[in-house]
Image (cartoon, rainbow, N blue to C red; front, side):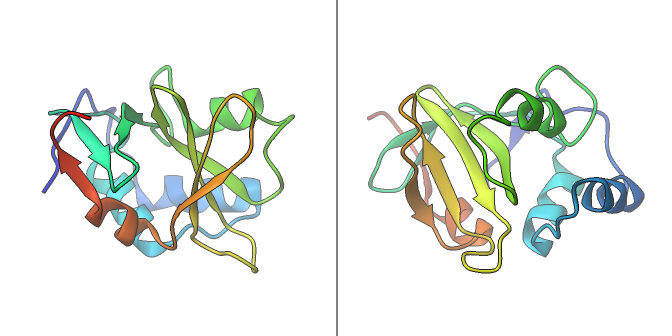
Length: 135
């Protein structure tokens, strides 16, 4: 299992519910569990995603800290569609999940051209495809 460093102050179920109400979204249960265990942070070793060998730099915290989901939602509001929530970063892009009914829970990465690429169809699948090592 991947461990995280520099995680932020723990959040509560009420923090999650507040976020969902404020943004009119329903986060996947597996992602909520992840947030409750690790509120943001950096993988403790070099982690890459799947065959893409996409480096995973950090996970955004729900609240507390400099890199939060809310701050990213505000800074990316010109490119994110309704129901898209950024949750992690790569050296070369933003990793986000869709919470819309047509592709609920799908994980995408968008680079500077903001042409999204599908990475996985669920948060669990996304995490399962992590591997250590160099590109």
